[in-house]
Length: 293
Length: 293
Image (spheres, rainbow over the protein chains, first blue to last red):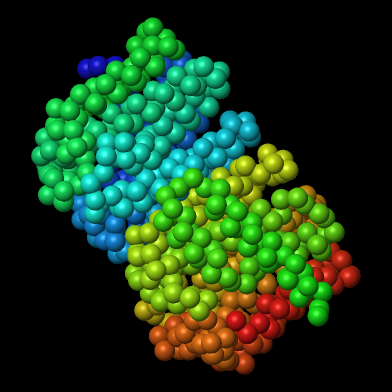
């Protein structure tokens, strides 16, 4: 077993527990808490919290609220999946091998469960106890940018707009930097903020986040072609069938793999600016580009 | 012209300008900014920002960022209207006499415009310049509660759940305390936070917010019966037609008016605990219960 595997096996149940505890503590209608919890508990790789935790591990900093911040980011990610899956958006019936939120709870409750998760996350950051006030405000400011119109929400709009036309590789990159990259990068920057690193280290980690975010998305596109529906927990080949703009469709499959590997290499080089010694964070990056789901 | 009328005529254009400036400053896809701005610019009474400003006026405190905070709350209110109007929720085609967001931009963009407004609002609070860090965090924490599963989102869920059954007056009150009261109360509490008042004054203002929030909602229900579609900018009589649980349906029209007036009286009494001298805030409260739209 690699050290990353034991890292993951140690932390993923703790992340799950944290998510479940946070939802339980909310005083809200039972059906709403159920809908919020349904998508949180539907599994997922917990990539964003793991990145935050791996950044702290890489920096050799322990932080009592890293799990809480990681869980908050996972909530924002989950809200975005619930809304993206809606009939008026991607209209997906399955996610992670389970029925999507609106297929179980109906559209209205799915929209509200997403709204509830997003709204909760900002309050959760504001209530952190071991993070200085100015750092909490920076986390909130950056999460708002990464998740909002200037980041994830904007990226989803660009993605929808691109559906009816052929885009360039640069345009596709802009979509993904916003749609998936921004929140993934935030999880890495959040680790840097909790660790209170200097500007140079923060810059190197931000660069790492940028490149690994793109590598992550390119691998997603590759998996739609190479993965099976069983492995993915969602319909494989959907991108090709819907003539979606993807890295393989614009660059060929091998071209996409080359681009993924280039971003992976850049990401790793950024880490070497901080430390010569590879850590769990390096393994997580490798996992991102080698994963089968 | 009453002093409230001149207050309103002075501030509403400033609130509108603030909203428009904030949207313009966002770096996001044009169509998304358009959709976000469409509903913000569709008018509305700007009740929540006016409450915040009137609280500061009542406390004789000037604050350079009161408009910015008020605009932020209006954004959260507007996001909630966009989502509430969606086909899977209230399915409204008109709002304030104009087509609803999804009728103009489609459901996907309407959902995302709402998400964008909500997400932006928390960042805007974090970026305030003249508010101490601890107060900004308190605003974010309270907004998250008021707008989220424990407040507005939870209230909307209760409202949807109540559609198929008869509720008691207490249950109806719980719905409205959450669905409309929580954010309205927050706008009043936000004024108290910006003014940094002591606990007694804050308690009196919180009580004021609770009662005026309920009076506001009861008047909404009354207007659905007594108002015309032209006055309201939305279909009058919709509640009766859909057999919705309302104060008039549970208490009779006169019973609802009595309850509205009782809450109004309680609200005014709370203000008298702070000052013997009625102010703009008193007039705003009176406007709330006497308005025709």
